[in-house]
Amino acid sequence: MKSVTCLILGLWCSAVLTASSVKLAEAAEFWCPAEDVTCLIAAINEANAMPGEHTINLEPGSYTLQTVDNGLNGLPVISGSIRIQATAGDVPTTIERDVNALPFRIFEISAAGELTLVGLVIQRGSAPVVGAAILNSGVTSLQDSLVRDSRTTTNGAISNFGTLFVIRTIIADNDGGHEGGGIYNEGDAIVENSSIVRNGSADGGGILNHGSLIVKNSAIISNSTDVAQAGGGILNLGGSVEIVNSTIANNVAGGAFGNGGGGIANIGGDLSVTNSTIRENQVLFSFARRGGGGIDNDGGTLRLKNTILAGNTIAGPIATGPDCVGTITSLGNNLVGDPIGCEINLQLNDLTGDPGLGPLVEIGEDDSPGKAFYPILAGSVVIDSANLAACPKKDQLGNPRVGICDIGAVEFQGRRLVSVDIRPRSDANRINPNSSQNINVAVFSGKGFDATTLDPNTIRFGATGTEAAPVHVGRRDVDGDGRRDLVVRFQIPHTGISCADSSATLTGNVSTGAAIIGSSPIRTVQCRVNQR
Image (cartoon, rainbow, N blue to C red; front, side):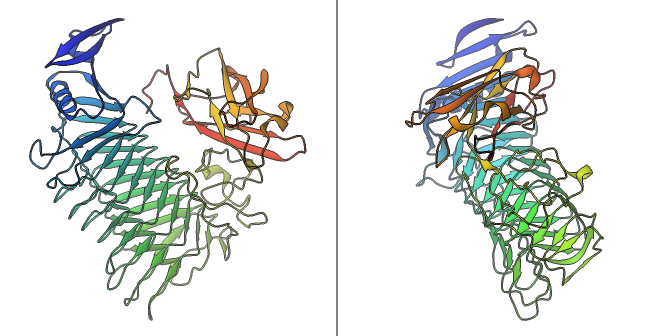
């Protein structure tokens, strides 16, 4: 491999030539100084004009767009294959519309375009129509990013007509106008390990889906529609939706004269929910018969499996179905708090009543997307009550589902949650599953927990937290807070981590016998297939 330095349109860039490269332009890399919008625009134009996949590196700072570049966009339309990434994780790197500028969106991706955004804040987009912040007709991937404070009259902060990946990302505090506060989808969309939070629109407060949507290991929290419309969290209009290992909570649908569905409204579409928790959603001002504080299924197919649907509410003199309304197909092992108001074929292994959950925990929603959840309390009827064959290997938080798994988005802990860091002092958490080397994991002390009291003989680390035993244990202050932490070394071949894994887990017991568990995201490298 050979590295060269080049100057393109007055921009210093570096490009990497591999054995398969024919031209320098097939792998160009651009570097933009902090807050240099001119550099960013020129780099996008150059990358669009060249074949191959290109990277634009942004130094930390605010890249504030003052004027429209084209049409309704602040930046050039993406027509090539471009990755735009922050060069630092501890200082924000923001691409934004100036608060005093005329309305325009930030990004548009053409049908031929491919855009990956990594570690960025995208904010204050304001397109009059279709995609306040991002309009995608090609392939767009948001990774470890934040899209917020964007406004439009119709079709979401993000409007997707192509393929959209939302990975470890937060979409928050956006107003989608008429349809889809956070995301409006007519294409194929995957939301994974992410949070859709406090978005609003006339209908489909968090997400409005006409296409194909998968939501995994995510939190859809505190989104809302106006007083008349449906689907506070998710509104599915004739599309297909699959929800797995996710928490849908505190969403509100107005539902004054039509459908409700505070958490989910499915109208004429196909929707399945597995190992998820739908709780404390509301329908307000319902003067029609349809309520469905948790779910409203109207003319579509909706299936539940291993799911908690309880503690949702409705208001209004004739509304029905606090938890659900319409026809619901149970595939078994669900807990439905109050099935009155919906037609559901309860199975012998379905439960009703109080699920035995603690209050919503919104830990780290500013920096740990997808982690809002309801903890299971000791003695809950949902413990060990799910269908093991249908349970995902890990729960919403990335913790292993041990033994007979539990109903809902998360497993009963019975163990103290602790903070761990894989490859301490490195932001990447990269693991090569094929490596024969060792890897260090730090267990942090804090809030009444002394990590140095962990019994090394009980510690295990790997894909589920049951695999590798330590080969070395050290004790030192890793995070500089004055308390000694535990640094544990493991042999990678013994961890059971594969290229398909996106998190790893450490378990153990302190000297008194109390159990602990901690998980952290990972990025696998040197795999034969591309990893997100």
